[in-house]
Length: 289
Image 1 (cartoon, rainbow, N blue to C red):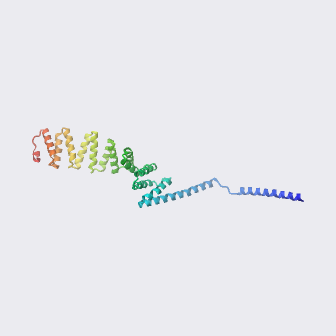
Image 2 (cartoon, one colour):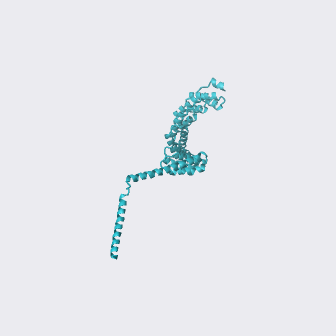
Image 3 (cartoon, rainbow, N blue to C red):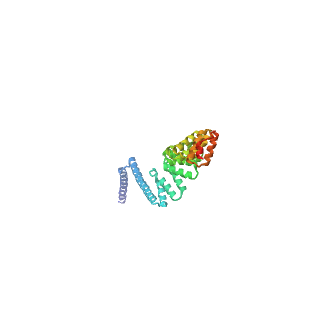
């Protein structure tokens, strides 16, 4: 009897094992399969959620930084804007370099401003403000070649701005780039024809190159616009005297004496010119004396 019961238990145990295996296999076979398309969709959704979080963090730090910037709480501005720089992988907040650099200027840290502007140009090389700001910084530090490159880029991106041209022209003159300086001051003379300082500077540059014809043309233009410009009249007098063109030299000396009849030097010079020109009698000179 015991043997029979033992046999029954063994059979039941075997059946139980088979049932367990069958259920396990059935359960695995009947479970839902995840397709590659579903996996891709899950990955896209995770990326979308990450993007939403990143966008929120970016906007939050930008907003907090700019609010402090408007309120001139410059010390508080810095960490927020650097966080924007760190998180902005898609260059959506490029103006951050402009305001962060200005913030450092307000904090009296031009070295940090320079670093920010240089970093910003790597991300946004055609930003006029960044190039102009670096041009100013480089110029103030006597980094002339770097300043020239910065202002040349500015003028390429935004031509015709008087202040930029003056800055570049000054740098060209400082570094003896006379031909380039002449081209800049030609532009300035056309841009601001009533500013005779530009034309006078241009004349000085022409004089350095030995182009006397251009110098005389410039002097004539100056006295056309400013007939009482005694310096230009003296320069013309000296030019024509050196050319031994006595009548022309006398002509401009007379103009000087009309403006400044008490100019003893001009009177003596005129007397010498009349003597050289063998005009020993001149009623006008007697009247002036």
